[in-house]
Length: 87
Image 1: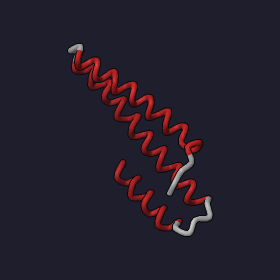
Image 2: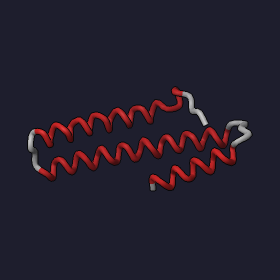
Image 3: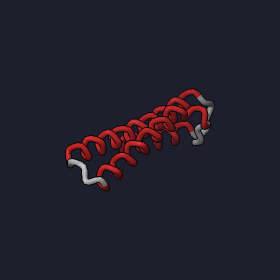
């Protein structure tokens, strides 16, 4: 299933946020910052990635349910499997 780029704006924003957070984690490690600060930032990055994944799956499921799609059942099953892999 293909999802148009305009439907993925929120996913891209979340991924860019995670990218910035990961860059901060790398800098913090290189600067030998406190372990707790690094882990807090790493946790935020991980959550941003998780939310991007859930948002992507949600968008895909919405498209499966609204589009006239001959492979709708297979696409929904694939989205469900992906959702469960993130849970």
